[in-house]
Length: 525
Image 1 (cartoon, rainbow, N blue to C red):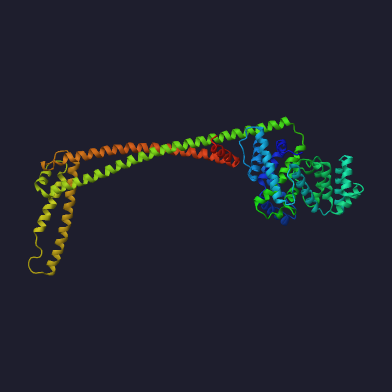
Image 2 (image 1 turned 90 degrees about the horizontal axis):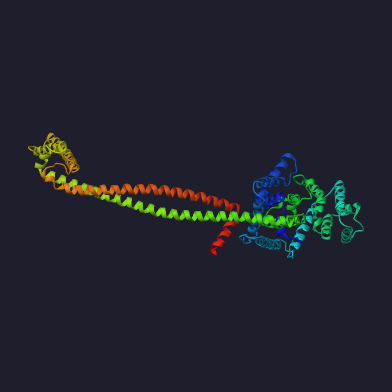
């Protein structure tokens, strides 16, 4: 009886990587891309390279996977199967968990195979393997159109295979085929009649699947007859399970004959049709010798690998959540510091407005009291400004005394009047500017020596400046807090992005990580 779990843990390093490579790389796009390359080679070079581009893709993938451990490849294989089959992945903590996972995978594989093969009514692993292998053999045989020389070679290979079987099994095969003997001449007749697929199907039924690898050796001639070559040391490794898998014949069996060019369905459908074939070929590996203690060790190694990765992922998520909490707290501090700075700036702006109002009040006092202006011309820091203002004010008064419109109105008097008007406006503007500049200097000098008429502004100016100084200090302190918080937030975000990138990479490598982790978090584990 077949056991998928034992089989998958019996796979040796190279076989394991080829199996996983085929599962990971078999998509509609990879097949079509390979077909384009093969067609180009055939058209430009006159060479038949059917399936070789796709096979090279597989070989490159296998080389990549040699950089990772057996337990990781084995885990990825089971995880990928679970994802395709929509089997919930569990937190693997024991060998029983591994066995249960494999049982669910094989159960869903049988269901999937039945979906694409309406004539299939089986329910067990044995039924699945029997149906899949028969279909592969029969489809290969359908494409065989041998010449006389090919028939001779194929009959020889087939006879050699049948002779390796016990006498009772040979007799059963002969009876089921309805022939008198299994001689080369009889086999040549069956090949000519197109019954070679039936010969192998009956042989496997009679001899059991332990005879499958021997049948593959004989079928190698069939591969040659339909214009295909088997990769990586064909005849040295034909008894290897992977030699069968890496052969485009397998894909013929998968998609129903005609080679890779019949890929017309979506990639999902291609993978679904290929998956039962791959699972069956894994189970054929059961006949290779593998000590059960070795299988246990491999299970334990894969469980340890999973637990290490799962623990790392859990820690990363915990670190990320902790960083997010710290980031939120620091962002609150940043917002508070920003608010303090903005309030300080608002206070400064309001007090500057008050200083401007105070400047306007001083200017009004100067404009209303010439005596104060005269006093300013000889005392305090505003002496030069006060003298300029006083001079401009005298000019404005003097200009106002001139009457350009006296006497008769002539062109000359009209021009003179216009000039007088422009001069009056210009002087008044200059006077007002000088007035406000004088008031500003007076305010800046407070509480310094000023005429008694302006001393009342000293206390008010002092209070406003004290408020501004305090606000500036608060602004400076808040800005230092902002700079510190922004650096902390930037560092936290960089670290969080790094952790999230690590988690994303782990999810790409092991898509089931998030599924298992989320499920356990929902139940509070």
